[in-house]
Image (cartoon, rainbow, N blue to C red):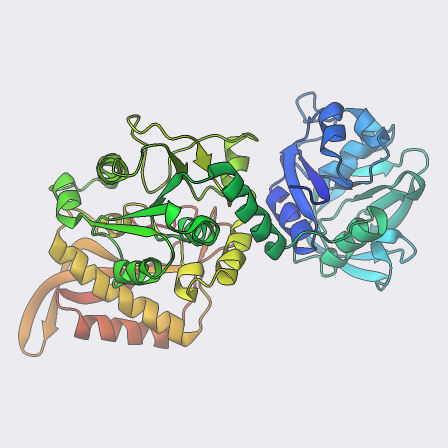
Length: 507
């Protein structure tokens, strides 16, 4: 891309992706790179600014990540955050010591409005601290620009050299005006023009795809998830019926989900192939109760189904994938690597693709959703919750049968309908058909039916979660509807376990 770019040098901070997203939200393209990126590579990237992330280490530990001091001598504006501040101090000859009193959480800080970072802000600011070391002695040429009760150097700057640092985290919501501080750094210090937007990204990617594939066919394994759906919509806009979307319905989708996917993509300017393979996949997991074995069996069958369809179009074709930027970051790779699509589970070697097309490779999930809305995808698809590749097969505890899947589909639909109507806040929610039966009474008859478990969680990153504290009145309504409307369930329970110790999925 030819946009102005800010480099995010990663020193192990948990907020690296959040920093990069905040920068992009402010209209500036950002890229995350390893903290030890060489000076020559930085020069070639021609960034308008550099941000050092936080990290869990102490700068005095021999194993702690560091960068070349010369990075700070390039004349490129640098902002160091938390560990990034301590590293800048260490490299430039200042002093870092363990805190007398560590700071964790939101604290009051007194800032100097004359600093470029705090222009236009009130002297009292709420900021998020998370540190056990602090800067006890500034490098030559720096001045303190904020302090808190337990941190005498909450931020500092050498305005002449355009070097800035904050012990607190401006990228998080807990720092009330953190986004304004980042904007000041980007626009007032780095001279950003704000030339990055989803509209601009879409136009560039359409042009890039057309240049890459020419008049060749592009094959996409479509799962119906956010990433593959947005990828399909973008490619349809770029190359029309040169795109072949293969959707494999393994029979483990939620109620009406396959119908919705088919209705959406059959209307698009592309070739859409829907494979109904429920019986085939059910046979693969017949008699299997272990969830990991279910995953492996289902995953092993996908490439076979994909191959049978793709071979019809694969003569001199490209493979498209909905790879997004966090996938690239987690892989530790900056180059174009063909990785297995999550809905294919390992691509057949028999298909000799000309190359890989990954138009979402540079985007975070929130940007992908925004792009999906721009491309006209329905809200139910763009806002789709995370859904495991094996689908409901792992939300049916124990052996999976079509009858069990149908029971679960109905219960899950009621849960999703009621939570959506209630406007209660939950980031992911679903029903589970347990392998437990319980005695119940319906009318004058004794029943011995399934126990249905409900799961709803709140989370920012899906790495951890808290159970959603849904109102008892809502849970009672959901329970009543499920036990009255879904034949085969006579008891409903609610999972109130966080992650850890549990996982988000219930398997």
